[in-house]
Length: 90
Image (cartoon, rainbow, N blue to C red; front, side):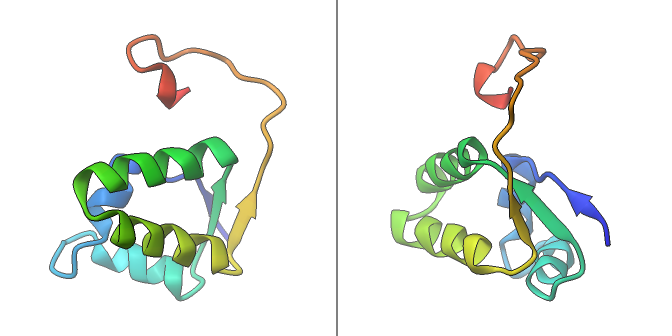
């Protein structure tokens, strides 16, 4: 099974029901791939989603992610700090 890390911008584009990227979100919900996240990624999902949609909707999305059995939580031991324009993306 494939393992992916999902950028927040990609997540934002996958959620709307009529998005051309919606099948990717549905594939995740249906267990077609493993979503790899860290606490930092989950915090960023929550923060950015809350800015774009209601905090309730953002919480529901994050809960759906965390409750899915195809999620793997990782604790990175090393950060490369390669992205200088947006340190949150490191």
